[in-house]
Image (cartoon, rainbow over all chains, first blue to last red):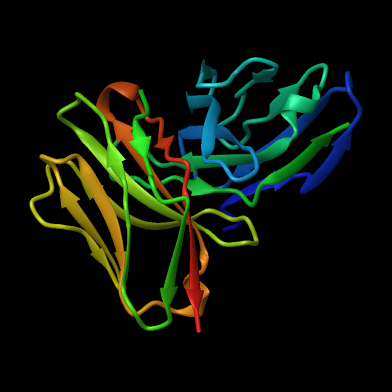
Length: 114
Length: 115
C-alpha cells in the first residue's frame, strides 16, 4: 500500500514548455486534490475531483488542467509554463465526504520554471 | 477575508516545554472541521489532529491537543513536552460543509525547538 505517489520529484521547465505531473493513489479514495505551495506560504487548491469523470476548479486554477479518467489517477497538466508556476505541487486524496476524513498527501513535486 | 489565520510566522520553544500555536477561522457554516498538519523540512505533509465543529470535547492525539473555542472561532494546537523533532512548519486547515471536500489552509507557523 503505497498511499499517494507523485512523479516526478523535481523538474525544471523552460518558459512556454508543457508538462504533466502524475498522481496515483492506491487507497480507492474518491476525492483527489492538487495544491501548490509557494515558498514560505500555505497550500492553495488548484483543482479537485470527487470521483472519476468529475473535476472542479479550486482557488488558483489558471494555467492548469486536470482529468480524472480512473479512481486511481489524477494528472495535472501545465500548458505554457510561466515563472509564476514555480512552486511545490502536492497531490492529496481522501476517503469520503465526511469532515472527519483526513487528506493523505503525496511527497510533492518541486517545479522550477526558468 | 481570510478563512484561516495563523498570526505567528515563527515560534521558539525550549525542549520539554509546552507550546501553543494559534489558529483562528472564519465561517458561517454550522458544520465544519479543523485540521492541523505538520510539514518538516523534508517537505511532506503529516496529519496531526482533527476537531469537528460539533465535537463536545477537545481533540487529543498523544502530545498534541487542540484547544477549541468555538465562540471565539479559534482552534489552537498545543504541543506538550516539545522535542527537537517537533521543529517544523505547522498548518491549520478548515473544511466547511458547503465547500464540498475542500480544505482551506492558513499560512503556517514555523516552530523551532531549542535544546
